Amino acid sequence: MLVYKIDVLGTLKESGYNSTRILKENLISQSAVQKIRKNEMVGIKTIEKLCELLDMQPGNIIKYVEKK
Image (cartoon, rainbow, N blue to C red):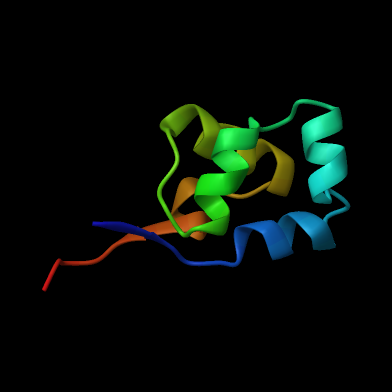
């Protein structure tokens, strides 16, 4: 299963993207922000946008771990 390697919302905030700005500028959908808050995986388009906003590769944001 895929999990986040970083605190996505915290990293966005450090990069100048707080929740209000993200939603106001429609950078990421509200449902995607809620999924990230719940540590649920978002779609590939959202991962792509996170890579763009954070100047990271997908492997910096998510990783695969075996289900137990």
